[in-house]
Image (cartoon, rainbow, N blue to C red; front, side, top):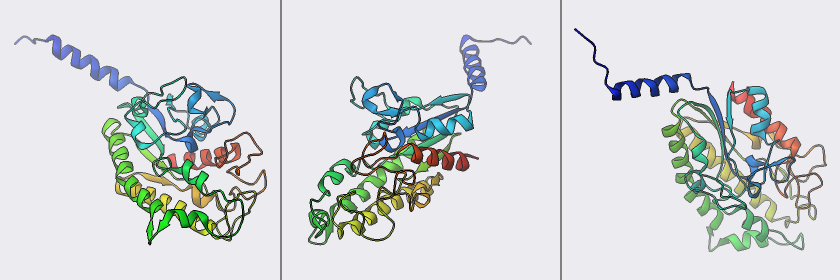
Length: 277
């Protein structure tokens, strides 16, 4: 009996062959903590404030995947995984556009902007170390606005993780949490970090709450947590240059205020490499 090969079957075979030969990819997704604002060298689109020395780029030097994509962008929220992010001279394409069926590793750091990290940082700067103006603003009649935002962000992170799995079913997903900004104990270091002493424990607890939510969503979706927060205890923005992983409100090194510096990025890269193996 003769074998009849249709054009459709031939096309399907070619697609399969191409897919089978595609090289594994590492894709980094995330916001400014992943992008590395103001750390040299900055990469286009320049409105994303993305560094060639962020932790994904540094980890890739060791991991050496045949293909690598880094669409991370400062200011990114969960919605920017599937929609363009307006930056100058952008836009930054949807970050999920960098996912493929051949993606073998994904790092994800997201959620901080969904809860309003930048506005919280501005609101909680205090001209005096006295009182608790930040907590007074965000906790009214026993209702904590930041906690509410964290709870509302949880299903958005869940949707992002499920979206990654749908687009890259073979990928190992590493959820990277946020480095410690304030000391793990005590009342901070006003004025280096101009946060009222009574607000320091409150804001520390909110960061731990955000990181706890990320850990829960990672576990619920079979992803692995890269616990940068635990590793960064004692490396917060109150510490001396050369020790801290996050710069204070007035940075000394080339990094954005309240964001990881190059030392932090190198440490985070080491954590990613260890988790990827």
